[in-house]
Image (cartoon, rainbow, N blue to C red; front, side, top):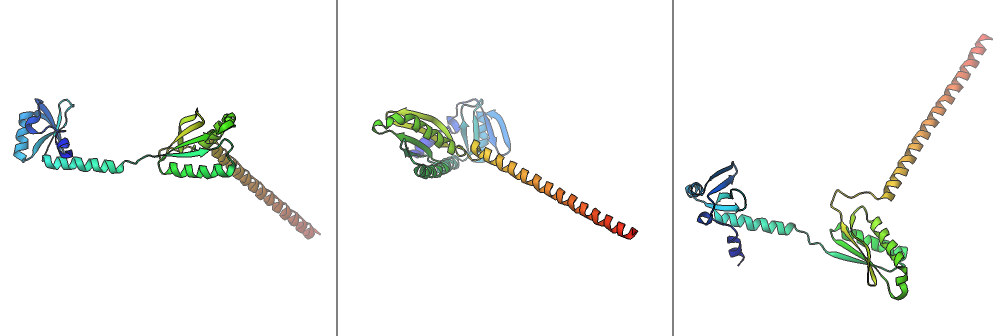
Length: 228
């Protein structure tokens, strides 16, 4: 059934209805009449296969049709193997989740995102805990901020019934941005290193001046002694 479906996908030889076609190959392309194209195929012992019927004129290849179908099936198989199945992983919080539990779930979310999966984090409000919905929103926003380097927000915190959802998707490789907190830390570290370097240079200069002063003092004493 699959083979029949693949065969019916392309027009071959006399099935091609256009008056002119563009023949493409390793040495370039040329526009010829269908009759000329069929003669070329016959001379080479291959088929005339229409690979792009909507082009003007339609694009064809001179190739053995069985070989062409094999190449198409192989290409589709390779593409299917390269496709990564994206799963949605859930992370559940309570409105008053403690710090240890929060860090534990943050670690799991990082693993999920680094594996290419999406994350649906939510806060479940049980009974009267719905009164703490603002606290739950703050928790989810903090969660999104802590994952800013590896995840993008697909949906901001939204209350649906007794659950408030946040949807995150992994960022593509090479586009992760540094969080503001990390940028501030790096800036402070750079400033501290620069201050330490300047202090070392100042100390070195001061020590040099002191050594020069002592040397000048000793030289002056020596000269005075010689005069006497």
